[in-house]
Image (cartoon, rainbow, N blue to C red; front, side, top):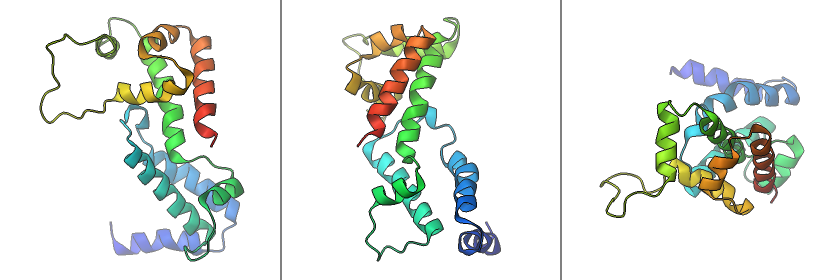
Length: 177
């Protein structure tokens, strides 16, 4: 990217555009690019912290709040009425899991997830160099507060209305502090 392009972006946040317009620009153009494909991400605590740190950095730039002013992140979020990016990732992951569970059993992604939910053979070990935290473990962590396991979630996801209720409950659980 050229220097003049980066300079143009920083001028937008320092310009005389109304604050609500700047927030809408951020939520319309920047957040979708940052969260592209987040339904399939394997998130860790570190990754969620990095996402939320970027989000707060950008919002503080827009609001022109320097770090020397001691304003909490919660106060900034309540002022703007916006969710942390990590909770948006969670709220998109569970509907995607339901979509895969309701897909045709002939499709590859349906068979792969169904096979991963079943227990692996007792002599199977994860190949060297492969990550220990997989996408299904992220889904399982999202469902843990509701006391729902992957197998029962797979069965419940076949009913769209029931799954929507579970997703709404899990998202509400995650967004409350």
